[in-house]
Each structure stands twice: as C-alpha cells, then as structure tokens.
Image 1 (tube, one colour):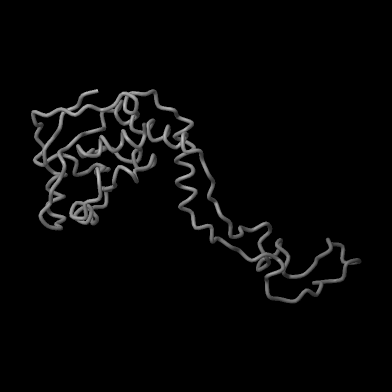
Image 2 (tube, rainbow, N blue to C red):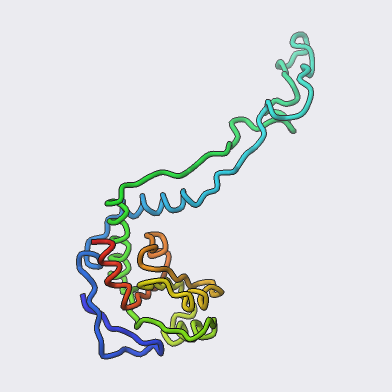
Length: 208
C-alpha cells in the first residue's frame, strides 16, 4: 500500500511511503481489539475503592428493640446495612484489575487497529520532524497546516524526540508516542494517525 508523504507545511511531497499489507492491509480482528483495549483500560484502574461494611461501622451492637411482641420484624443493630447510617452490604473492596494477554494476541490487536484506521483513510505519513527548540506554537502550526486543529491526533515517532514531544504536551487533542510504545487504544481513539517516516520501519519490525 503506497501513500503520499506530507511535509511540515501540510503539502504533499514527491516521495511515497510503502505501508506493509501484513499490518495495514489485514482484515481487522474485532475480538483481539476488544481484549487488548479491555486490558489497557483495566490496567489503568487504581482499584483503591473501598466502603465500610457492617463490622467497620462505629456504633453499638445492642438490639434496637425486643425480638417478640412488637408486631413487627426483628431488628438487629443500628449498623445493619438495611438501615440509614449502617454499613454497605457487599461494598467494593480494594482489588487489582490487571490481567495478562498473550504477546501474539496483543500484536494482532495492534495490527488490526492500524488496518482499521487505514481502511478509514485515517493514516497519514509525514516527514520526520526536526524542531530547533521546544515550542508549542511550532507544533500547533504543524497541526494547522495539516488541517487537523479540531481532530484527535496520534503522532507516532520512530524514536524518542524530546523537542517534538514537549512541544505537543500542552495540546489536549494531540498525543505523541514512539513506535515501540504505541498501543491499540491510542490508535483507535484518534481520528487521525500521523506516522513519521522513520516510524514505519520500526512498526513493521515490531509487529512482524
């Protein structure tokens, strides 16, 4: 699959980039995507939720009234979960939500995510960026030249570039990652995926 390569001014150059059909041309596997995204979101959860149960409420354990002769149901302590101010019945407890997936399945999920975005014509290749200094203004200008001001954008770099990363950090709808750290959720969460030229080879090497 051949695509045009754009420069930082948003204009198509004479160069063309070849995207591997083994990654960008496969039929997306929906279940693999589901599992990988589910794991990504689960692993981000803190799991520190906690509510007090009956045994943890401060208060008397004395029976509220005598058991028989009142004409009503028996009543235990004021800490009962059925009463206002009582403990929570089967409330949340701290837990770890993390779970594991096979490496091959995660690799298939990322391939499927890239293939899905390629089918939607949401993948764009740009020349490798070289910023002289850390300036949000320069990165914002780049996004404006590509006419992506109001879109969620994921930029994938071939290797770490502090000037580019730090210049983009203050922009809410932009995320910059390297090829070795890109995940399925980020790819699918973006309206446009910008691939730096050097990232294509890195992505193919990792996913193939």
